[in-house]
Length: 101
Image (tube, rainbow, N blue to C red; front, top):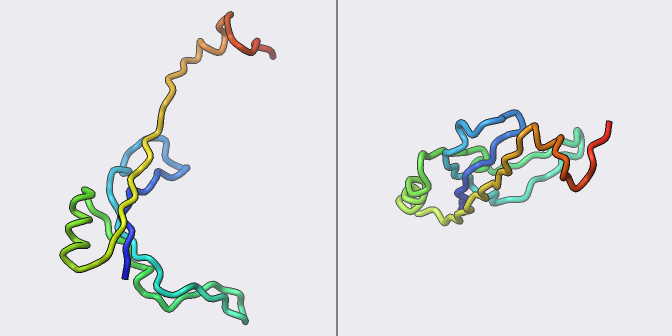
């Protein structure tokens, strides 16, 4: 029984960073998923794959995993680099690509 501790990325529907600071503990699948021959559904008998625990801090998630004897791996989040661009930069005269209609 292994788990993965990570901070989920924001969804495409989010424009801000609200609710993206929680840490999640997911269990790795113990058995591979199977394709049902009749309907073509993907199924699994692994019930732990349905469990998702959220924590306020990474240390809280690690403490929970160690307390319950769960092997875990921590995935550090990538910090995004934001380039500050203003609307007026579209019309600068010294642009690398000239502005056209």
